[in-house]
Length: 229
Image (cartoon, rainbow, N blue to C red; front, side, top):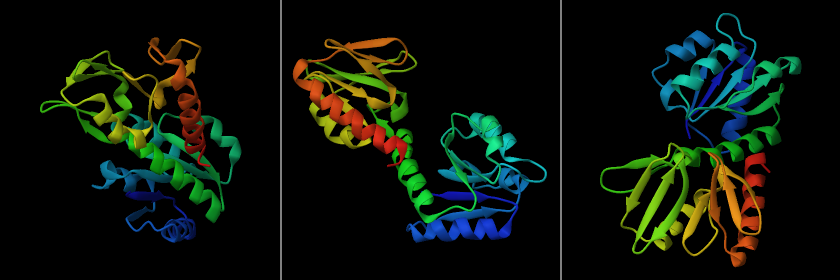
């Protein structure tokens, strides 16, 4: 995981970098201003960015707004001494807010959460022509010897690999079987009743009774990962 730290306070940058290195991360880049970050050739390859909200020049909120469009795969952790500014800092890239000074425990929680979320960007080679990031997949369904992928942009893509074979790869990436023939992406899970599982995009798929305990267990584990616990 390549980590960026953008803060106009040198001591804060060094403190965050030391905490990251204590967690075993070595590929860390520091930026003394928002302008320096935005001009960096490494910006597009950052997996995680510790970002100060208040900086002279280009501030953290403006950077967040830009990255939502240009770098959707870069996750942001806002660091601030002023919690009242957090209301303006929410965004789809933002996974955590930390109050300065950062602690070893808070950075550990962030790293666990970021490591889990970066799985969403992992690209699956569905067939010889198509690959998809995990986050785009709603669910998979077995049809005879093939597996059909249903995506959040309403595409249907067929693979010659069996569903069982796919599940061996996807189980560690936040996917869960809900019947012998269907596997869902827990990122898009909304709710379930006795017969159906409801996903985002107003999608509903059937669940087998014997798989209901599996879904509950996998959902609980997934939510703990999302919370960084």
